[in-house]
Length: 148
Ligand SMILES: [Fe+2]
Ligand SMILES: [Fe+2]
Image (cartoon, rainbow, N blue to C red; front, side, top):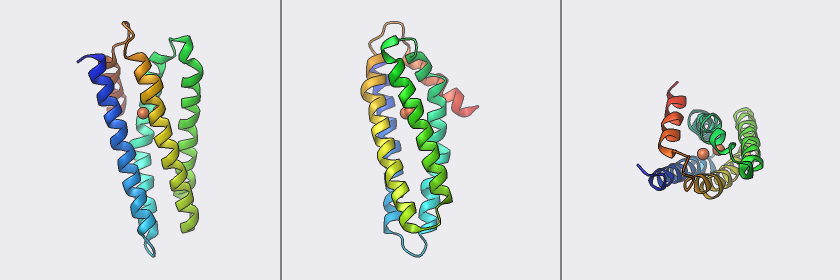
């Protein structure tokens, strides 16, 4: 598959994750007495899908992007955002008040949306035209990192 096709697949996967996270947050927003279940569903999506994805990126696509001087500051800032997503996940997991949980869930979902969109627009789109970048191999390495 061409870099353009893989870039599209990566972007679509981001949209799926953003939608999945927002769908769980909608359930949390509409839950009342049993809001802890909604919080747990958001936390488990972050722990099982979003954060492993973030970790897999750091050793694959981000490390490929770091070869280009023009992308180094951006990639470092993206890694810092991974740290903030991790911290918000932990705070959400520990939240014991519904309003606090809602606020944290909104923050993490907005941050993740912006973060994923930055990857689409400024990392993936920037790497795709590079002749020495093989996005198919990078995606395969990400899947290996997630499986291992
Ligand atoms: Fe990321
Ligand atoms: Fe990503």
